[in-house]
Image 1: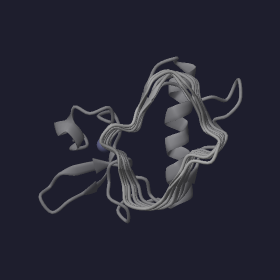
Image 2: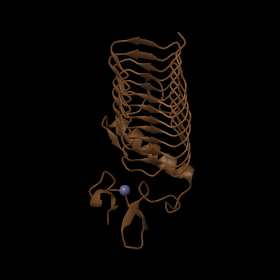
Image 3: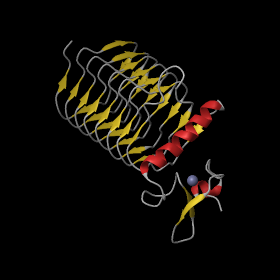
Image 4: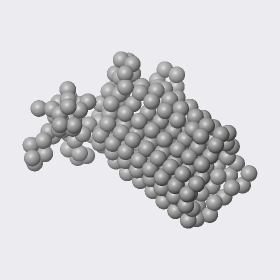
Length: 235
Ligand SMILES: [Zn+2]
């Protein structure tokens, strides 16, 4: 029997089942809840890396949608000119431990739509060469995109950031949207660079937000922004 993800027609249908729930539904390693995967975090992460490497060799998108991560994970091995990520789909994934994409290189499209990060998310100096979609993502811990570079469009519409969030020195080179995004704690855009169209339409900052020393080229829409704390805009 196939994993019950997408009624047995999901990307993992060729994977063997590792767990069956009370109603008899079967789950593959990637969709089984934490504690029911039958392997430790290290082995889980290695199995996941194998899928990514296979997709890169086959030059296709790696669909990892709905994956429930077992614990902390670091993706720093997917960096540089030869070790980059293939096109990747992490939509609706659940990251249960700290997730580090520090210095990783997304050479193709990166989809994180509706993913949930329960702990910290680190995209320090990560490069996104094509469009990056973080629409409706829930960041539960501290989040850093410090020094990251988005060469394609970056989408953060309806995204919620529950911990302190850093976009310092982040480069948005082809437009970005934060429309309807919610920052529950401090947000820092110190030294960020905005090229293309930038939308902060209806964005809510519940605490302080810092826009010091940021550069922009192209239109910026700040209409209906709500800022409950202080806005620091030192130039
Ligand atoms: Zn599955």
